[in-house]
Image (tube, rainbow, N blue to C red; front, side, top):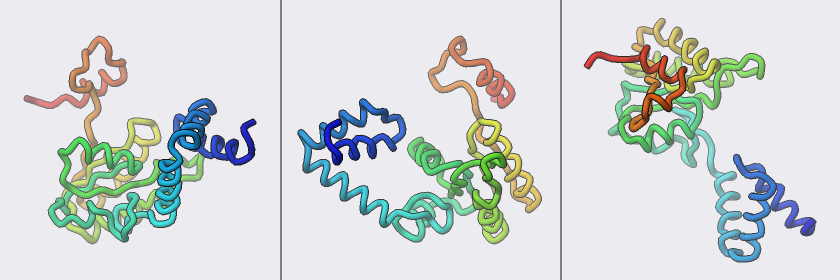
Length: 197
């Protein structure tokens, strides 16, 4: 509609999550009409990131080094590993600011129907860490989905067989939330994971 290059740019922007045709069009036109310097910077930064960013050899999160900043930080607790499904989950926990241990990023969850088994999730690499490092507790922070729960149970069984304590993050009522607005499943989980005060 606009010309080959502009149409290609609009189409390329649609690969971003939550960006539909209209949003992609607005972004493309903004970059081309009003912010060509910003567009050049964005393009070069994306190209450099695609070329240089890979996976941490220890925890599998995104990094531009062999080991990420968390794995390379000697102040972090080596005895505590939190297992998450993806780098976004790791960043969410880090932004909360209360966890000082290490991580392992699965890059998904068990889903035999999609051909995703333990090998694709690096579970053998995680088990090697549990065998070879002084890990005393494994915290499972997979998503509260059927696949996330299945993945958590699979990993828990493996870790327990090695004598590592396993815990699951609690799910429940959010801070500031009112009970009347919380869905039934969340409320039931909150009741089941209650603790003594």
